Each structure stands twice: as structure tokens, then as C-alpha cells.
Image (cartoon, rainbow, N blue to C red):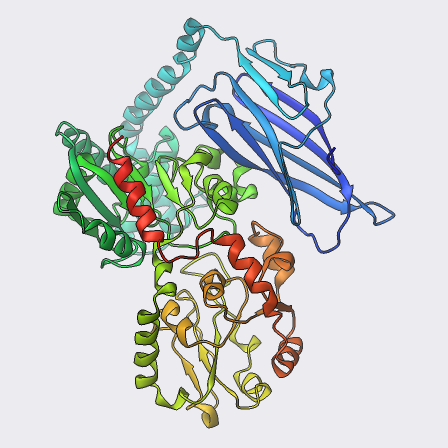
Length: 596
């Protein structure tokens, strides 16, 4: 019997297109838990999709011993499964996470009237399983009705085409309007039509008005994309080379990270052909050469395996051939901050549910079974496609020779650090990304931190690449404090680190592999939880002491109070295999997929 009371308040399908779900949960309240989670699992027998629910409210009842939680969301039926646009028969069940409790297929209460459909046109019959853990959806729609449902799509396409033709005829009118905007007439106009040269402002307003009129995205970026899609379709007429593996990245210009480690394993096979398209500037939305466009189309169409290590826009705008296997060798370890489809505030938006980014992967790799569901959820793929092979680039943490090499290189370059322990300060950024990324450096007073350590430690500052501001290093401590934000690989610095001070950075997973004590300086914890969110409750999850003020941080440093006993459990939770053979497992998975 579950210790949580899980009740479905509302469940109905609207026009066979939208599924509305509202949930109530009650249970024993724990003040340390700030963000309980509800996830829905949709299973059609071929794919199992995990999608989060937005928690609308969560608060303790008057006696503070119990909590009540309300969750709700609307789900687009046509976008539940990637390979089954019109969802036929499927099962729905729930998972509830409260702190360290994770109740899969939680039993629920529901009354028959909650399953009554308001819409007479609905073709779904919904039944409850005997154990009240599953809802069974049966689509009674006939094949003819399904084909008839395509009619609005065809009409919509024809209408858009007609409106595009009309908008071309209206170009002179739109141009006159853009001229009036130049003369400050009170006419609505986009922000980028108000800056730049006169010709550019005229062009931006005219294009914006034309796109708005026909409800289509027109312009150079769209033209480049359509051109590439055409070239790719032509390239698909070629045969796939059964031994060709494409290494693809617009994150890096050289063979490094997970791609390098996997290549080092696969290169031992004499019968494989390797193609490398590694270009951090290759973004068809901005600028891409014709030669690169032709190369991409050719090798995407003819490779048996495609390996990618980050978001790659073009992969989600083409139809990857069925015979080709697409692997996401994601660069991160563990599961910390939510991303992609896991961000419930985003999934609430119907537009976000239609997003095709990441959803065509055949496999993604993860560090442990514990987090496989979370990665599948974030990417919007079926849960069985997330494989707990381990992360290839972490193999270096089990190589003593590599560790000694990096230590020697560091101390040869900075000999003054040889006789001291090293504290590395490596916080993550605040803000939305590269443009707005920042860290309030005044929050970390290097002079006070150094003196709190009694001269026993030297300090390395390692800010995230998005952070442009830098801590001011006191003149008297310039030999004992270094800012290596621009100069060194953070994983290599871990080999000389004796204490890590961070906040929400995923470097904690790599640090745990070396059993490095950690102090979590989370001065804005509650704000960060509300704006970004974590897969786990931060205060129950991190492998070290949490401090929320500079004073508390200095006190912990003085007393050497880091709670390092938490590291061992954390490490085994997020890494299934501590053997340095993740690259081999990924290599085997790739080779096995080539035989399918």
C-alpha cells in the first residue's frame, strides 16, 4: 500500500487531440523537500515515453505533518510517440518522486465520472486496470476516419500556399508601411526593424509583415534549410555504406571528449571507415559554406552510424534513414539540472511539445540505470533507448598514468603550488546562456577565503566559459591564487584538487570519482530551484556540506567541515561501473547496432 494518496481529479480527451490531466497527492510533509515531481508514462507497446507534469501548488496542511499537492498538464496526443503520430492504443501510468522516495506505477483513485468524455466526437475508450495503477486507452477510430482526419492538414497546407502568393502581391504595401515606420508613425514593428542601417530596417519590417500575413517563416535562413533538405533527399538515393561511421559535432573543432574516447576503441577495427565533420561554426541558421552543406548531406545520408555529442540543429530537420543508427554521446555526466523536455514549465506550452529536437535518437548513453529515465525524458525519446554504458571521457579517472602526467604538467608550470593543498572554486553561471551568463564575483572574497584556510591551501578559480567577470586577486596573494578560467581543462585540474567549492555545477560527478571533498556554496538556492530546477532534491542529493552564506562558508573552511562521507554513496548511485571501461561498452553498443 502506498504511503501517498494519489487521486486523479480530471482526465479527459478533447477532440481526439488533447489529453487533460489533473492530479492531487497527499502524504507526510518534509520541510527539506521543495520540488516533488510527477511523471506520466505513455506505453504503446513499441515506445515508452516519460513526460513530466507541472506541479501547480505544493504546501503543508495546517498541522504541518501532511502536505497536499496539485498537478496538471495538457498533452498533445499526436506528439506522445515519435514513430506513431496518431496515438492508437496505449497505457498510461504515473510516477511520484518525493525526496528520496520514487514510487513507480503509483496506485491512484479515480471515479467513473472522471472518465466521462465531454466531447461526443472522441473515439477513445478509457478503462482502469484492476490494480488501479494503469489507465488503458483504446482508439475506436476506423482507418477511413483516420484518413479523413488528414483533410484539415491538406486544406491548411493549401491555404498557407495561397496566402504566400497573396503576400508577394502585397509586398509594395508592406514596403510603404515600413517607410512610414522609419518616419515614426505609430505602427507595430519588430525590435530588429528599429536598429541598423535604413535598408536593413526596411527589409526587416517588410519581411516580418510578410511572414505574419501568411503565417510562414520566410527568409535566408529558411531558404538555406530548404536547400539543404533538398540536397539531403537527393543524397539519400545513394546506398548506405555499411561500415561508415560519421563523427559529427558543432560543439568542437577537434576530436575530443566522448567522441575521441569512442574513436580510440573503434579504430582497432580494420574494416571500419571513419568520417569526421567537426566544426563549431557549422550552423546552417547562421552561415555555412556550400561545400560543407554538400559534405553534410552526403555523409548524413550514407553513414551507417552517426555519432553526435550535443544539440545539432540539422539532425532534427531531416528524416534520418531507417537503416542509419543515430547515437547521442551527450557530454554531461549524471543528472543534475533539468533540461529539454524535463523542464515542466516548458512542456506546459503546446508549442514545446511539438518540438522535434533530440527525439530521433536511436540511442543515448548515460552513466547509470538510476538516471536513464531522466535522460529519456529530457530528450523526448523512449526510455529503453537510454543505455547505462557509462560516459567514455570518465575513463581517464581510472588511468593512473594519465593522472600522474597531468599532475606533473601542472606542477612544472606552477611550481609554487607543490607544497600546498589546492582549493578549486568552480561555480556555474547565472542567466540564460552565453549572452547573459554571469556570476556575482563579489560573493566570493578571495582574500577572506585564503585566510580562512590558514595558508594551507592555494586557490584555483575556474569560472564557466559564459562568465566574463573575474574575481580580483589580492596583490599579496598573487603567487597563491590563480584564475585559470581561460587556460585549462577542468577535468585535468581535478587531478591536483584537494577541495572543490562549487554550487550547481555538474563537475561534482567527475570530482566524486576522485573522492574529492566538496563544499556547496549555494547562496541563492531557493531562487535557483524556482528558476531552473533539479532532477533531485538538492539538499538530499549533493555529496558535501551546503552553506548558504559567505560567513557559513568561511566557518566550514576553517573547521574543515565538508561532510565527505556522502561521496561514496553518491558515486555508486550515479555510476554503475567504476572500472574505466565505459568507452569499450559504448564501442560494443555501436558495433552491435551496425549488425541490426
